[in-house]
Length: 209
Ligand SMILES: Nc1ncnc2c1ncn2[C@@H]1O[C@H](COP(=O)(O)OP(=O)(O)OP(=O)(O)O)[C@@H](O)[C@H]1O
Ligand SMILES: O=C(O)c1ccc[n+]([C@@H]2O[C@H](COP(=O)([O-])O)[C@@H](O)[C@H]2O)c1
Image (cartoon, rainbow, N blue to C red):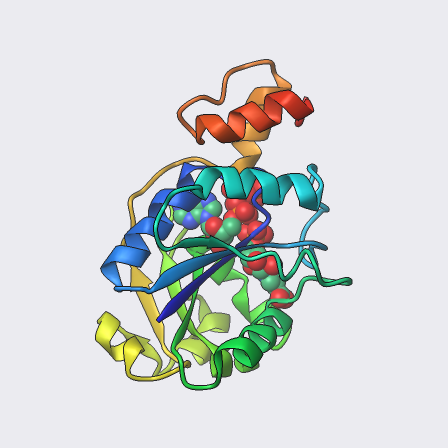
C-alpha cells in the first residue's frame, strides 16, 4: 500500500512528519509520498514559491526510509486537484495497488466540497488523521461518503485498491504552518515545531518575514 499526503507545506512541520510516520508504521505502508500543491484550488495562494516549498520538504524528509517527495503537482500547470493527481498516480502504479490518501481531520471535514469526491474514493482509500482542535465526527454532508465504507483495520484497506475510510490515531502535535509563519513574522523562533534543516532554508531565503 502506498500513502499519499498532499499539502500546501508552507512550510512542512512536525505535525505533518510524525503523523505520516505513524501512518507508515501503523498501516504497514510501503511508502508515503508527500505531494506539495502548486496552485491551491481551495485557499489563498501559498506564501513561499512551489520550488522553495519542495526544497523544504526534501530537506525535512532526507534520510527517512519510506518517505518520498513527489513533485507531480508542481510539474503540472493549472489548479492542483487531488483527483487529477490520483489519476496520474494510477497511470503510473496501475489499478490494483491500494492507495491511501492521508488527510487531517480538518481537511476531511471539507471533503464533500472537493472536486469529484466520489471519484476520489474510486481511486483511493481515505485515511483520516486525528488533529488537535479538529472533530472527526462526520457531519451530515460527510455521512453519504462514509456509509458502508468505514473500516478499522489496515488489513481491510490492503485487500481493496480504493473506496474505504479509516480513522487513524496519530501523535497529536498542535502545530500548524499558519502558526510557524506567524512566529517568524513576529521575529520569534519556530524551533522544535519543524526540522532545523527547514528553519535553515527559511532563514537563508528570508521567508515569512
Ligand atoms: N498538526 C497536524 N496534525 C495532523 N494533521 C495535520 C497537521 N497539520 C497538518 N495536517 C494535515 O496535513 C495536510 C497538509 O496540511 P497543510 O500543508 O495545509 O498544513 P497546515 O499546518 O494545516 O497549514 P496552514 O496552517 O497553512 O493551513 C492536511 O491534510 C492537514 O489536515
Ligand atoms: O482537489 C480538491 O478539490 C481539493 C480541495 C481541498 C484540498 N485538497 C487537497 O488537500 C490537501 C490538503 O490541503 P491543505 O489546504 O490542508 O494543504 C492538499 O493536497 C490539497 O490540494 C484538494
